[in-house]
Figure 1: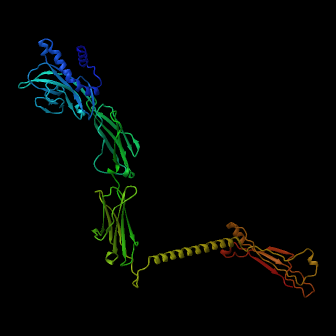
Figure 2: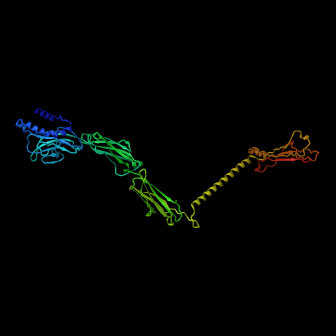
Length: 520
């Protein structure tokens, strides 16, 4: 029995313990028996050994997950001076104790066996990363001030801490489409140091611009800070940015999403419509419609100004939500086209997300009145204008066609000039002079002048001084009185007469022919 107890004590002192979880459960069972055995064992020795004070403390290191309960065991043997027992973290005794017997109050630790003079074991509930460190069970001697009498060897404790849920932050305010925005994702309180941070936008991975874990050296817990840059577009109104953290203490990744619409601003498109279109008839009712379309976020206001004075009669409809996540707003203003309102300026003023207002203006025009008191129709005026334009175009086309025909005729006439003599016979057969004339046969002389090629001025002067003559000798008539012969063209003799005065300048290029017919 003594050998068994001695081996058990030896194993306890040498630090050969079962796993930590087993120690936590079993230590409470045999701690008291062990303490009684030690007291009995040492009481059988010499009186000096029996009176020596000893502190038996749970050896380390111990590892515990954040949020769990840490148990620290401490047993006193022997006889010590008057004074209490404290649990302290680290070697700095000036720090507040984790547990103090003298004050009989719990700081961070809770005593397991209350009222015991030998068992000073404690529990620390809901362990945090900052609870990591080395803990000492210390016996103090009463005095003013009290002094440390004896300290245990210390128990080193490490806390396996999971990262805190990630948090995404950005600058306060909004930017418009095309801006490059920086987002930060942070997490802290984790241990060990190794951690991974990834980014995604609408399911598509984004490479972080920087990821940093500090402190750089050994620490009881760490913090991570990751940065990603995203260029926003109008389509990002409903986009989601995701930060994901993985750590070996986590059963699954921690995620945090961020709506890009929270930092995006899409200005409205302002458009004004009129019904009917301007100009309008006097005293007609004209409706102005202002549309502020596709803006984000939804906080927008719209007012009408008539000649820079706010109109109180405008009707503003509720903001509508578009399918792409943007919003639209519409307002109408009915105006009677009185003479006093002619050329009045109406302005639609849209203020969105505390930005400078956007505006669109339209001018009211009244159609001028006709002499009989009725307004001239725009359609009739336009028809008249079109008719006049068509008539002018047609007239120009007619003039153009006439000019072209005239030019063609002039060129054709210029190419022909009756300046040559062509003598033709209607019928002429060999040996006809010896036959009896046919009373029904009539012979004509066709005098045509072929246009001569254009001559040089010197040639024209020479030709102008010459005259060609054609002499036609008729044949003797036959005794038959029924036959009439006007001219016999068997013999044609052209001769040049003496020079005559030059013709007029405009007829310098003409040729003249003289035909002399001798009578019977």
